[in-house]
Image 1 (tube, rainbow, N blue to C red):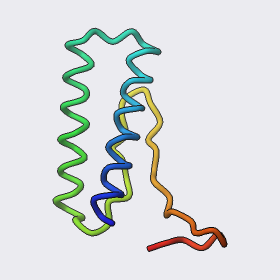
Image 2: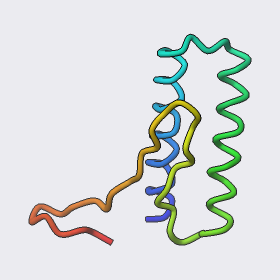
Image 3: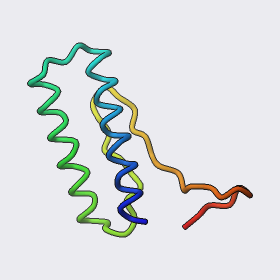
Length: 79
């Protein structure tokens, strides 16, 4: 389950960086540097909180996205 949640966070992070790159016309070098920094921050978060990966680092000029617990068909969080 931890791996699944981390994959969701990484996908959200990538989407946020791609959206920022499109909106602000980041150069490839800027995009690559920002991506590397964001991934490193995410990895640091994993090391400090290995069992509760629920926050994505805030990127300058973008809105951070937090993951919500997945819901079952009756609307209760799945853990």
